[in-house]
Image 1 (cartoon, each protein chain N blue to C red):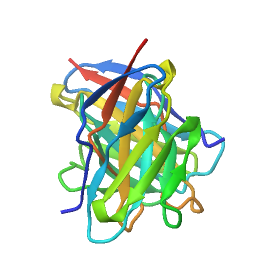
Image 2: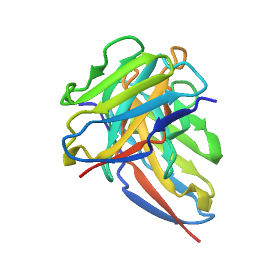
Image 3: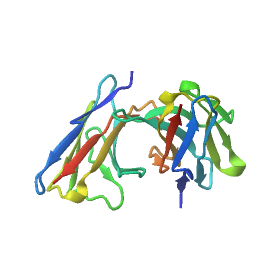
Length: 116
Length: 112
């Protein structure tokens, strides 16, 4: 149980285009989803927290107009990287939690984004 | 500022040897503590967690961790590693809210 999927697993896009990454909780309802960014040989950095039906809360330094997050249902959250640039190339990871699982997050396998 | 430190970037151990991965945190109170493992192509998997109570916590895959308040540490241990344990290990803490703060990770290599 508690499986989170991400799609696509890897994507290459051209500079200036937008790309959408999906995060789905497959066997549970996720009241809260988190989006992280992981740089090579670095830790996971929390980008934003989204609750179903509400606007996402972004961490300091994260551009909300660049990284659009939508959490339209209890099983799906999307991250859209708008007008992507090479510096946006990274590994993006989502996680999800239920209202009953205090602090325990279930992680997706991640999406490797390369902007050329 | 609140922080999590994993002092060892890379550790190499022989298969069958014991393992200890270090984790220290900086916070005024006891946080909620976690260890995750990340394997290529797979999501982070929770190995174990500590919220309160017994300071020696048992997890999955034969791992355990001990919370030491006096040292602000939560080190991960395994008595005998297997080749399949090669992965990246992350210590994480939650400081009073649901957000996780991760350490920089320790890459574990197993040699035959």
